[in-house]
Image (cartoon, rainbow over all chains, first blue to last red; front, top):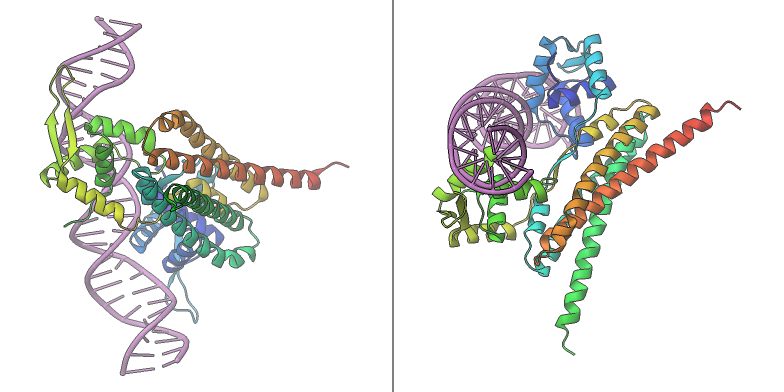
Length: 181
Length: 181
DNA sequence: AACAACATGTAACCGGTTACATGATTGA
DNA sequence: TCAATCATGTAACCGGTTACATGTTGTT
């Protein structure tokens, strides 16, 4: 049995929550997981095809008054694969953060303060997005999305505050040395 | 002028701190930036070659009693490119976190608690690594590496504590409901 | 009539990881 | 002499992003 691809993992999980079209999967990922797991059409559609061919997912043309779309749902084999992945040890978080790299290469306290302010703004932006989607997460019965959201929100708020506080401290210090008196 | 590749960014920054061989760049990245920016030999050596060809970097065979190695240093053009990148707006952080995805798909409070414990362990591990390298960062004159490290350390400790606290809370609650009395 | 949103896909490109291949030097 | 570390690189593979291509349905 081959390992699930990264995109397969998010697709199977989403389909267990609710049978969906590729388009809907993309919309949900953008809204609810994009701050820790992304997927584009260029990954989703080919992966859905592979999952159908592997028998983990089943696609039925949505009939009735609906728009033409392919509703995908997990097969029993798909459910087993999903559970198997969920039972295993998750890989550690992978981060790529250009703001941190700027900060790392800073040579003066002014550089540090600037990098910190830019990072604070980036974390603020993500936190705002998470605040927007919080009501939707609260209205679900499943506990996962809301805990995830709160963890993300608190993490980004913490990082934002840390950066702001440290930037302010550095500017306070430089003022002491720069003063006219 | 083409954009700097991701690996070029970390290489140029490292070379400004200290002229180095590809091997040394890799060692520094593994030790000091790997928790927010990685690079392997398979990226570093080809990129060093491209940077030499583009005239941003200059490679001199290290002479003297040294081992045979190619010491790379920034050219004036390389310094300008580095500064230009440093002056621009950094891209936002990109994260891929399988633990968060497990958490997101959790269907019961027991699933949530388990996912949180695994995440706490992952953050603990990263925090431990950062604690190990803290003394080295403290001994530098440049301020960048130490602030970066402290931000990373506090972020991972915060996430670790958050996950632990919430996991404990959930288990406390289930005990109330599961009690024999 | 026009625009936004719904809906599905492919192809080219880019860049990162992994495995492979090689060889010198240093210390136990 | 043997293992670890220093040191440099290439090739195959994998997977993600971006741009392209197309057509429908609902709203203004």
